[in-house]
Image (tube, rainbow, N blue to C red; front, top):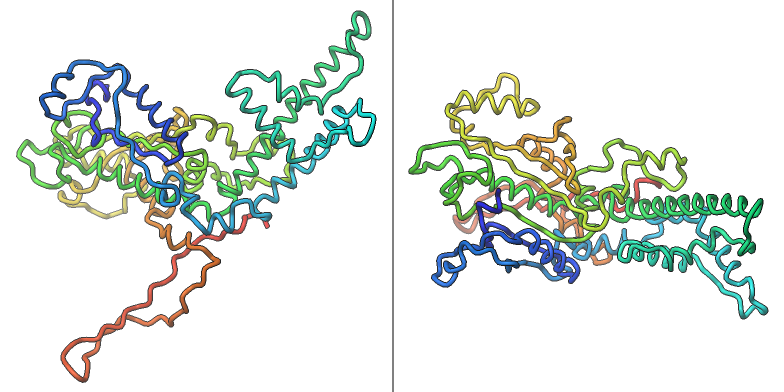
Length: 460
């Protein structure tokens, strides 16, 4: 109903993408499906008025982007020299994944080498499958399944290292039964292998892009800050496009549900759509603490039961076409101040201070609304919002502020290899009259370095 009521307009539906071509293609592909068979827009020109009422097969859209290295929201890791130098592929950061893979990848490489070299007559004829080759084969297998829905080439090739039998073409009786048992054993071994690959990949992401390195939270703060500003703007706009609390010519009401009765609001965005990368969601999820709520660390020496119960599982929230959606709900029009107070008390009990009283102007000016988070189209409880899927905006806003919105991204991301300016003793700001004149000389407090989280893994 939102799209039926509000045709596409560049101010109403804001598209932004990473400068990587695959992200731009995702943004464009999404826009095609999003606006397919929807009404065309009308910006007022005589030419454009002619298409109103028509439903074009493709709606052209504006998609903004920033060059790689400058994009601090969608391709943030490339804009953070400290992360590139001190987190990416650092031995201490990938240690847990390396430790876990050492338990099975080397053995798999050796067995695959042996299978492929069974008919080799000289050492020069032997294959030499390395650990790096196994990593490449795994990726080829995964993409083969994802793109072509088949496992007959690279997956089967990788599986040669799991199972090999010289009894080809046997039939009947005991040999047939043994063959069936061998097939079941091979399938079980294959499932176990890919479970291990999945855990190894999660260990990589947990420390390279996730909560395993506290510094990674900084890389999600710009996106979170933009989210907070966008929601705040949506909830404080009234029907005339003015900030709430400003007198309007029509009868005064509280904001209605976003998307309803807002025909004359050119400044309210109906949707802000951003397209990035898997690590965009990983960094942002780390900032929000979505997959570290239980406090259990992910390491390379856990039990099978612990791995099965792990909270951080990228196949569930960072797969192909993974997405996060924050739905914004504005309260329906209230007819009295008392009903507004009741609504606020009901939705924001955690933020209510005992004995505090809010006057009418404060209640009118405070943005009210609900936020709901969906991860891959499934509702998810927001940390800090209790057990309800719908979170009062004031509660979620405080959570975002505590998490670090408005952080000094540039200050924390500055390269550690560059020389730092000499430290200056901190002094209190003070003004004193100059002896040679009437001008006041101001001694300003030296700016402090930003408080940045460590780039060291939480597991030493």
